[in-house]
Amino acid sequence: MTRQFSARAAVFALAACAATATVAQARTPLSEREILQTVAGKRVYLKTPLGGEFPLYYKSNGLVNGSGDAVGLGRFMQPKDQGKWWVRGNRLCQKWQSWYDGKQFCFTLSKGEGDMLFWKRDDGLSGRARIGN
Image (cartoon, rainbow, N blue to C red):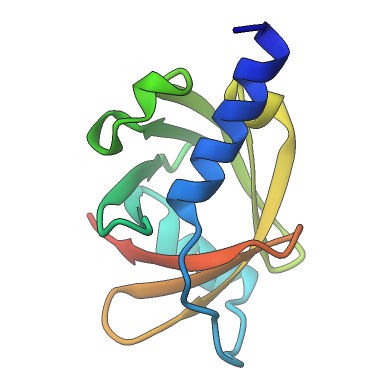
């Protein structure tokens, strides 16, 4: 398997795990302050198509840790990664060291019922997540 193919497979695998068939309905996007209150120091569990959850830990210091071990991503990509996160223009942005070849993505977030969160990435991919502690 070539390195380029492996990187593409990793991007596809992570996108497939994060994407869901649920399309976020018209919801009010969270403000910068609301995003910070919602994710800083918390774990966000991305819903996966097969019913699992993909955990991301948004540390208050601007670092984010992710682990695909629970959803079996180790076969397709580096199972763990760390990156940076920040809020810009009412969007949550993040950049991983290896995942997505280090490309930056930003997300619009909106709240659902209880601890449910809806996200839409700047390339149009969308899904659901659950806010943990």
